[in-house]
Image (cartoon, rainbow, N blue to C red; front, side):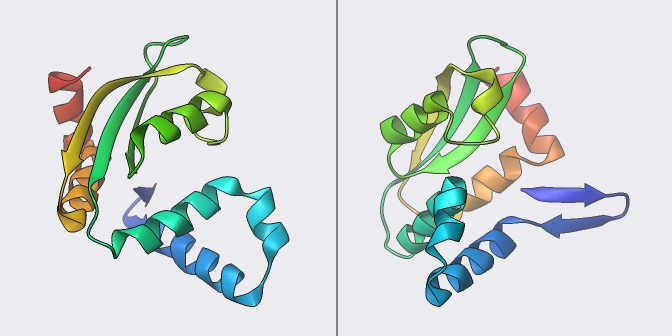
Length: 132
């Protein structure tokens, strides 16, 4: 996922992971408690090094079907429960959510590359044409 600023694209995920790792090393537990989604990113970064099955999922809001979200997880049911419980700030306002598509990858690098593609402009158009 990237932040668009007129002519500059700034990647956000590596910054969040690096900041989270520094916070964990410094022992700032209150930082992690106040931002549970950053803790999820940190745990995901730790798990990506272990060659596990990883899921790319596309969910749709039941209350507002025009709202969609693309994510990456190793435990699909737990992640959907977190979205529906409002633990993710990006999806909390449009609960409940349902899974539209889940794709399992054995290779972590391919999974993260496909998630990044789906969050790009052409990837969003692809998802809209084929999944939503």
